[in-house]
Length: 314
Ligand code: SF4
Image 1 (tube, rainbow, N blue to C red):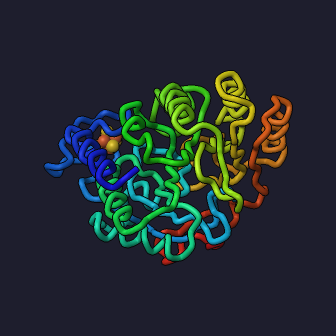
Image 2: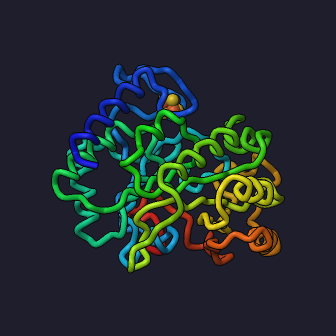
Image 3: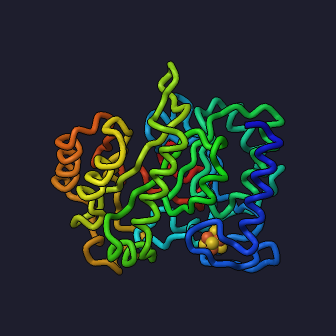
């Protein structure tokens, strides 16, 4: 999509942010006037890190890393959030669209495989304005939309033709757990509807000859201790509504961080037999494209956003 049309979508995103209905929280606050809603985001993007990142699935990282933009604030409150320093808005620099566009071009210059904003939705107006500027400067990287899945249909429709690859979570299979663990009672229904809409836009994952993602969707399922995520139920739901060829990323990297102790079942790491059980279910259901993780992924995957390089592996 060209810069002018992206700029028009950015204007529409601005309209959706005052009163704010960019996400299912529907806070209705006037962000342009300085009011803040549940996520705490303002009118200007707040950025915690811009780095070539090697912690994503292989088609997202390519050989030289994903061009990842970690955005501050969030519309969920996951008790175990590994990015809690930034999701709670403790770290992050305000960036104009012009500065953000310069960073996007630098990620492309460094040979990154994709451009990947993380938790972008509440910063969509400024992000799209930056994207339009970067397009005018020659940005060609596929856009990967890394989201917790808590998205409205209206916002996703705004992204049609702009996002190349969706990278959504499906965190839970029942509302009791989504409320306890992420402060969202309607997460399951909303995220499932969002995932179907994303898949209708972009279809299954497509990679180029180098194995880098160029279009499609990767569904992320973080396996939680004591079955809190309901992974088997979520896999059954995916099988019922999406092709068995859809790409799933089954993640083992859970660590009891932040306020995990508030939910006693989450106050430990995942056992190997729990992860093996989830892998076996995916296998028995017939899914054909499943990324798996080593059990020690959590050792190197916990970031510290106070550092210039937040991740050990970058
Ligand atoms: S983006 Fe933020 S302010 Fe807007 S509706 Fe969602 S949580 Fe509320």
